Length: 339
Image (cartoon, rainbow, N blue to C red; front, side):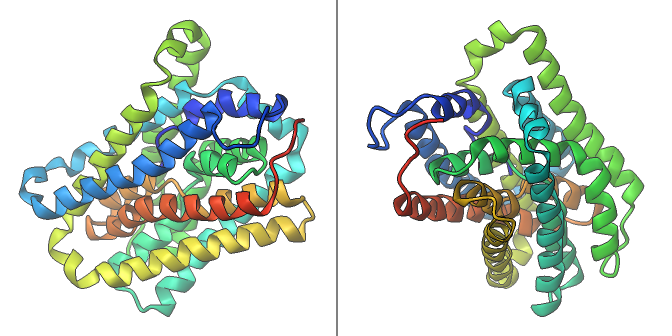
């Protein structure tokens, strides 16, 4: 799921890549904003889930609003993008292609293996697999920055994986989750186009046409995205509140394994390809962190609220685990002095 602050930090992150740090004290403006993002966002989402669990009746009938809420998040993402986000694809097509292949092979495959290994019910199995088939979330950009990884590669992979989602996510879901539940891949393509690609392109167009005005509100966009994502989680949790008590432990185990193995295998893919430590760190987060907001929206629309539960849990946990892993990685390597 798209965490608060990711897109709005792109400009600060680009500056970090080209301007030497006066001191490696972790107190730069971009560092502080990124740390606030990965600290506040999981807390906010966890609180929203608790509200949905405690008062499910308050959200009755809200499930139909989830796609529109996701559209708001994706529009905010588009507003924070510039053509520079696509330059990395041209400069390093091999690394970006490797990131995309790793993302769309490792996470869907892990989702299928975990669903089988844990003997999940059809609804939960389809939900776990759908999370794996989703594109990267921009939270990965912030976490890569905190880990002192290759932010340019992270931004490129996240951007292209989102653009390709209408072509990749539905057929992968049909292939891997079709044995559990019926999957209307054609309808799923349409939904992703409407709730992801068109809002992102719309936001990008607005940024290109009215960049001066958008720059004035960039600071508010992360919080708008965070609140919107929190609303999605509250709705999803409320829709499956009755089943959460019996399934919560199993779902968390599935999410823990999915995310943890994704981070490890993503990093391993970068190491095997000899991309270097910074790029390998970016690969870890681009593989292990997902746009679980999209997965929740698709699960709610095409399966059931229970199938969206893994997405809601993933949205909280992958930000927590990402921040922890990033802190560990940052301590193991000095920040580059520039370039």
